[in-house]
Length: 302
Image: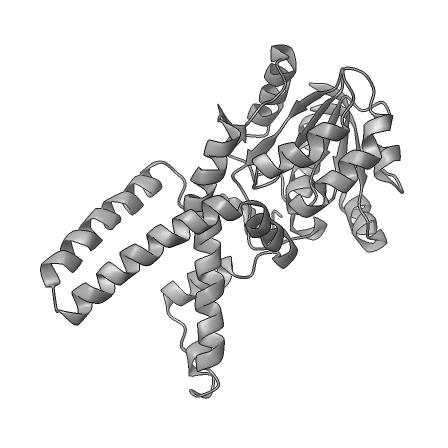
């Protein structure tokens, strides 16, 4: 047992997967959860994601050693303001948001002294959302990034131990650098995927839905990414605007270069470019980061 009581604020895919694994492996004495939707709370309780459900976030954090904010980035400030007065001295507050600087700015002002704040981000997920999508193996061999503002090393070490027990590889990173890295590896790709699917939606009106019917593997990958939670991604782009726009600008420059190569029939440029990018893809596969979740997480074991 690493913590006595853990509070999960928000009960979607990430929180659900955490709750299942924590309870399965006895990593805490009690897992308390809460969510705005009564239906979500009912499903979470039925699936055994938590030992107990409370009506409010303030109730959930009572006497909790670890509080994990699993709500959209845009809701972090409101939740932090609600729970701040109810946190016990020495408690640790962390989050699972895909943006870190905005979360720090939103949460930190509402936390009392004596509470350790350790912003974080598990690089794991699927296109599915909600408590029914959680499964305990989600974090196996996935990176967990800490961007600590707390100087309490014991609290950082304890949280690190938890995530390692959940199956993650843990790394510390500067919050602003995190946001730039994620703009490259996650945020911009999702925006491009949403855009490509939007283009297909326009085209299917003049192709009698053939774009959808005859989807090849590349387009299927785009549609999988674009199926992700719209509220979460709306908040990500609004709260990581600077880094995302910077990467999109770089992407546009690369796209124009490829357009020029195709227009001028510059086969050497295209071959060299695709060879270089193919090597990057192979590096991703060799690093074990080629899927959003382990294979055993997509079937009946959910």
